[in-house]
Length: 480
Image 1: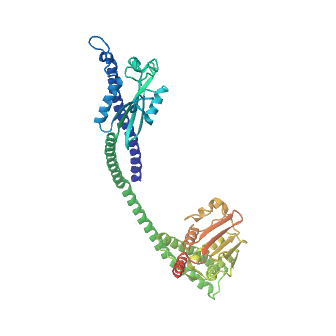
Image 2 (image 1 turned 60 degrees about the vertical axis):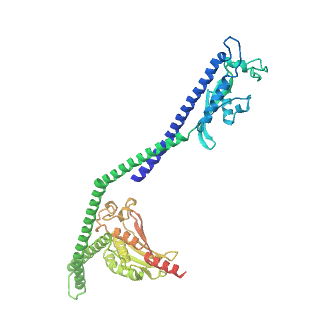
Image 3 (image 1 turned 120 degrees about the vertical axis):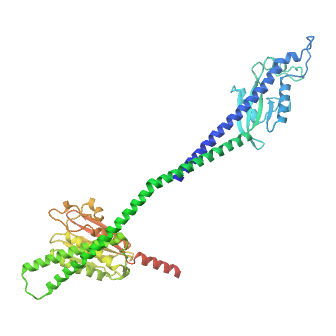
């Protein structure tokens, strides 16, 4: 980000330098052109003022010496042009008396500008003989002493033998035309720009390095330490949960096993005994399910929950789920049914992960369905034959639309207002685990529910896991 800011600022500064220096070059060369123009006009004015003295002898008689404004100005301009490097000064006019006064395209535009009453100067930045130059022109107006050669009557010859044009004072007689080379100014500006940009780059790098060090010292390093501390705390928490869950699961499994042994024994027992032992088994099973979910979530967040991809028969998975769920459904007086599409092939997935997904969904449906309700489990092969859609539909209390996304969050449950007078046990980890396991299997889980009418949870799982599919694609590519 710092580098990007420096680059953008450098580009803006370079564009500003180019614009400012171009304007500065134009201003300098225009100032030089105006100075030269004043010098040439001063020569013209001096000869004009001295014209009478030049052409008058000591005895007061008139003797034309062939020295007048145009001759003097052109002579000085010619000598200056010959002795300078790239400078050109000359005089031009419309309908010239000599070929050297004929205007080029730029000079013709300048003369037109003066004729229509524009300003007394005209200039353009252009190229001349392949070099950048300033073309500058200033107007020459007819004065009193000009009338002797250019005044009236029109058609009469003047003292130099040329025909008079019949001009009047203030008319445009012609123009001074100059070519001012800009090469030295451009090179000087480029050198100044290079120095300015180098200074800016050095300053920007110094600021960037200083800012980077400051951010590193007072922002990045503390954040890295805080992140490391949080990671350690999270790892310790996950390890603690996993350890405690393992320590709890063993005695709970033993309690459930002992109740099974008690139920299968032949000793005579009264109804109260059976009820109490049944409650012990029910509570132990619920607690064991929460412990198992806690272990799986801890392993999932620690990154140690690896998938065991193998051939999996969905009928066997459903059988294991119903072996656990049917007694609970019978106890709660809830009708539990299932349908498995016979077209579903043997799947290549993690059967245990699939069992946990379905067991959590069916367990939740049974907990949220009042006595006399029903829970239906169905499995269908999709139209492409590449995935299985598993759905669990109940006639329970339903879930509000605003809770349908939240219930998949960790430690989150549906709002109590949807289940008046009923407290649903659970840790809020079941659906969080379902969603994450479904994603690990390459699938997804969705919910559709209406308060008071029930819910449908649908899980899509590919017939072949993502890892299996990638290996199959690689083998097909190798075969081709």
